[in-house]
Amino acid sequence: MILEICASNYQSAMNAQEAGAHRIELCSELAVGGITPSYGLLKQVLDTISIPVCVLIRPRSGNFTYSDAEFDIMKRDIQLCKDLGCAGIVSGVLNTDQTIDSERTKELITLSKPLPFTFHRAFDWTPNPLDALETLKQLKIERILTSGQSESAELGIDTLKMLKEESGNDLTILPGGGINSENVDVFKTAGFKEVHASASTIQNANKTPKIKMNSPKLFDETIELYSDIAKIKSILKQITHEN
Image (cartoon, rainbow, N blue to C red; front, side, top):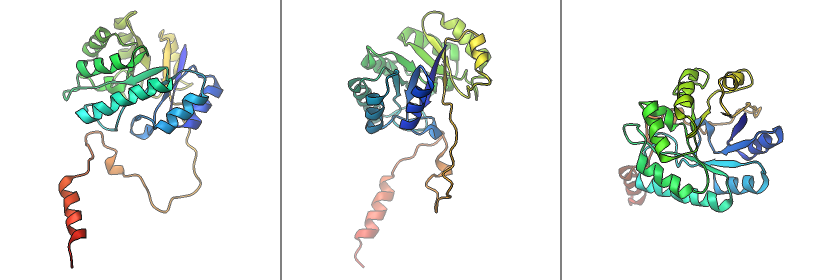
């Protein structure tokens, strides 16, 4: 069984390799489900890690329906990852009704070639997993990263088994979400060939910050955050107003 480790920083990538993991999915900001890592992190990891490194292409947190500008960013990031020598791309796009955006996903797959393409956990938002699976089979992707549309892969094991059976030899179902040493046998026994885990541990900084830099109200996947033109103009009006 292949163990893929989701690494969100350089130390995690190094630890994954040292521990004997078979593959890395590199991203940033696990707290929001992962976004595309920076150029510096990509370069550092790809220059020093010898095991395969797949890269998450997700331009922001929140939903998986992107503007034209965001989609252009994704395509540029894929080309950058190819140029730097990554081993695979992890991405995907949904329509506003949460079904697979076939056209845009196909464009990302084509741009990613000859690298393998994994459709990420946006799959878990789709209204009908079997319909989504059929769409992705037709797009000829290599694997789907999914928790079986549940809070954890263990809770979604029945759906994962169904997806594995329905996928046949067309693609690989990659269970991910809360997989650890205590439950990985569930997936091994069920015949899955690969699993995805972060294997994270929390290290306290031993010092409470003077002020918090995170914003709990923004950890909401039903919202989109953007700088407002009217608010910017209002601020400018005040700072340029002569007393």
